[in-house]
Length: 451
Image 1 (cartoon, one colour):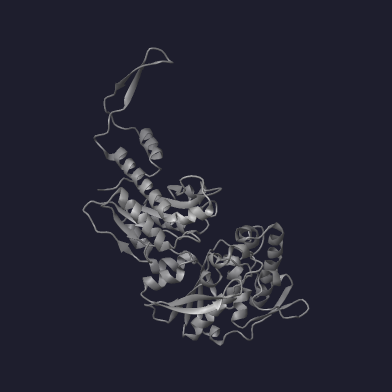
Image 2: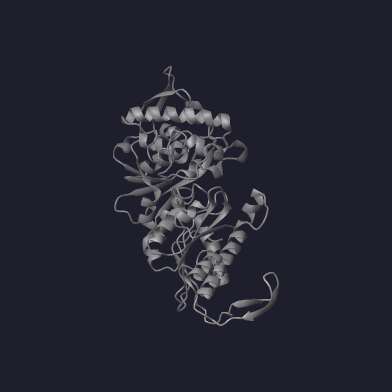
């Protein structure tokens, strides 16, 4: 699929349905722009005259820099930094093109994302955010007076300590020995104090705003170690070690800021990166508060009949600030139906109905390995979008067509045997039948297209 575009609109045909596509990316597979392209292709295969507006979404993770730079016609800077397993990698940051104040964009996943951690080295205790600090330092050196940091899709669990070390902070254990830079969460089990006197001087004047998952906290039973540690490769024993490390990070950052940050909203984002960013003076924000300022989703939804969104997985965590639920929240303000497509549908996915998603489905067509699913992602997603759009068309036909065949009535000789099927006279649909139609047609007949 093609490169990231925003927004892209298909040619307008009179009375065509208006479809807004606002997907996230599929981790380790498709970027948000590619996902949008696939869904568009599927929609147009089903209904060639649909008016499609693509607004690829980013949640602070992969594609964050690219999306904001493209939207504002900014510029991208490519540099080498320390990767998550301490090897040099090629990375990037950007500058917005329409900002009154020189504003840089840093995507933590570009230096510490899970997708750039080799599969056999995925362990949040041994990966580092040091490269993220190098990106921030480079942005400061390039003249940034404001930096937008996107947190998401991380492969780390060092509480942002590696990032802070790259910016000049020094950390010590309980015996006052300096903790080596960039060694990951395992090096923080005896973390006791911090020295911030050597921080990059421009941090005193630059403003850092962080787009993060507001629901992720650093410590406790819902803390980053227990919720996300296993997803990043930690076994049960390693989860306990990571939890201890995060408790230490909370203590050190709390002392520096003179407040308890262990359960602060966003403190656990991206393996605790939120806490580390708080330490260097950053302000955390719910990611959509920042993202929607640039992508203008509210305006796009106003003139839309149907919204498609997508993410790699939909489960009980999706309503906690993930792209599909945030898109649905905005759409529901205008009573616009929402379909969510996902690589996988997991435990608790049904909670997304209450979050405003009218229907969701996995794009998988049968048993598959992860490798094959990733390789076939474009085809699977396009097919799923076409299928969903065809279901919407069925719903519209059921709700609006005057040419539907009449319902049959069954004449019976006795209660067990069907004798003959007789066409019934058309009659007005009852509210109960309309509700049934709505359920049968993918929960999306609540609003028929006005074309």
